Length: 349
Image (cartoon, rainbow, N blue to C red; front, top):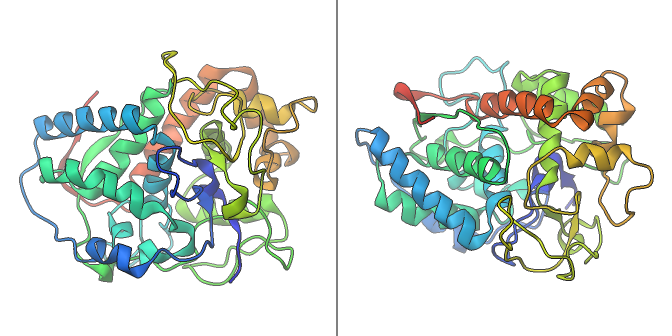
């Protein structure tokens, strides 16, 4: 089995449950089929969605994010559900993939890149039971958006009313998510998926993956900036360290409001305060004198090395507001890839 760090997967390692896998792993050992059977058998309930349902679900998600400090893995869950989209697939919905809740079914939940995400899904199940009119696709995107917003990030203006796929028939093929490091053959990407994304360079691979979704260079760099959150784990991805001075518990980690964040020690972070969303990821990458214990992967370094990525990375490094504007636009677009709305989309803010 090829063990590789996926670009999406590395974005947000969670501290909420020690068993959660690092968000950026593309081909981890498979999640146990026994664990996922309850996910596969999930039944979609059709009820009329109201704004009150969404507000109630949002309140519960906010509590969950604070109590479990699980924002990073919620971002990963939503991105992996949406990031399978291929704009070139002209099939009837949900044939092109996207944010449709398919990740809760086998075989998609068993894809290597999705290792550990069943745990994130399971945290949201009680909220779905409380608000059954809210689809899983909406819950995933809501939890991701609130993770960013409550960490000090921009208001994302997410819209709701997504329709869930109703069976494993709606699952996306494995291989559409990006890699953060090259495989044993020295190439990024590999077989599978809806389009070839293999490339000897990180920048080429990222473009093949994100252009397939409909993003441009600005969007790719902006989404990379979400690495300000979370950690990568050596025992899961082979990258980073088992612990650093920022993740071993000796450095107090705080939420954006200054309150101490509970977390399990371990892993390598891209930034010193990995529960706060800001533009420090770009500042660290651009600083040759940055602490050597902070993570800089090939896909990260590409945003400053590539001549077309670099102008955006420099702007985001120098101006947090500019980064937030571009990030909000890119995240919002990602959240609606391949979406089918059951009614007129509902926006809460």
